[in-house]
Image (cartoon, rainbow, N blue to C red; front, top):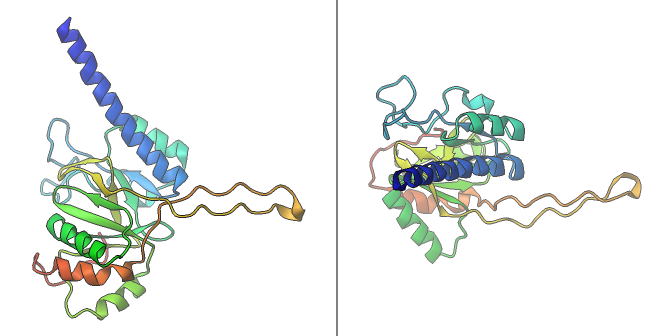
Length: 240
């Protein structure tokens, strides 16, 4: 009897975890209109080996493969189908366009940067964390605008990575080779968009659901560069 109960408990826990990933993917796609696609995931029974053909994959499990990044969508039916068929797949956000962009850095530097921003009274948006790297979600930016910001810096560490148009990042609660993805700073809603009046003075349209508030990258980049200095590298990656 204990063995049967133990099996049921393990099955229940697996279902709960799978449901959490699907629920998160649907929230991102349908409520927040963030285009998502399932990541390649890990090899069954191998917690750190990527499911892609590359035996030396630098981001095990945490990148698109099939379907590719261009398939990212906000369509609820597609999202539900993907994660029903691959319930343990990581949730990959296609950054840029109307979706959030991101800046990522080593976890130690990320913790220092958040502490420095808090001391300075700078409001920070959602922060995604793994055991090795932290990622700050920011308002959409263009590569041209980012280039102008970085041009003002004396030096930008290569360990500071920028995820803009054509890039991606992984969202919680995804399992990856680097460990479980979690929120270090959970998303907080911005003010909801007001209801709009209908045509010809008819019924007003309902207010749009509030999406998470996102800071402008310009308010964060100086502190991120400063705190990331010394973690290695001497160049900038504009997309990941």
